[in-house]
Image (cartoon, rainbow, N blue to C red; front, side):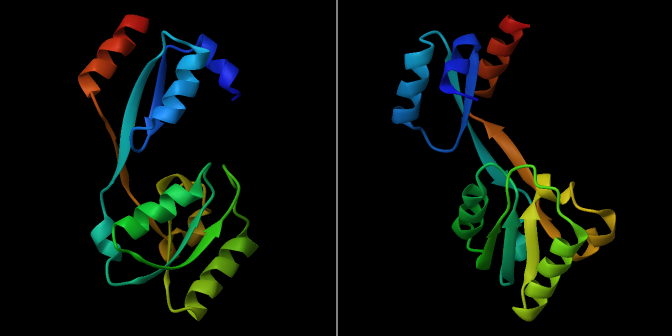
Length: 148
């Protein structure tokens, strides 16, 4: 949404490190809005250590996914980006699998993408399980309770 949508918001969640520049833009639109941060915590990252990976993602910011893998020392041989909420065709999934086979890599995607993939292909595609950790979780819950 446009930044002006923040005028009707109560809370904002930013994923990642503290970002004063973004906070300033948010507060410029709505001085009363509360800002919280989250971090993605990979749950099964060790399954992909010491393996060569072809990573693909159809999320709003696939670079975050690729960077998370690299930060956790996953050997990402190739990064393949698709548009957000992408609906993978069978032909594209076949191409991804053929490409991974040719490069001697495993296919790895996001949990969000994995659940949009046709059941027939899921056995050949891995996904990174993620837990979202909210900083100041109790304060966040208190703010939600005030709103509802």
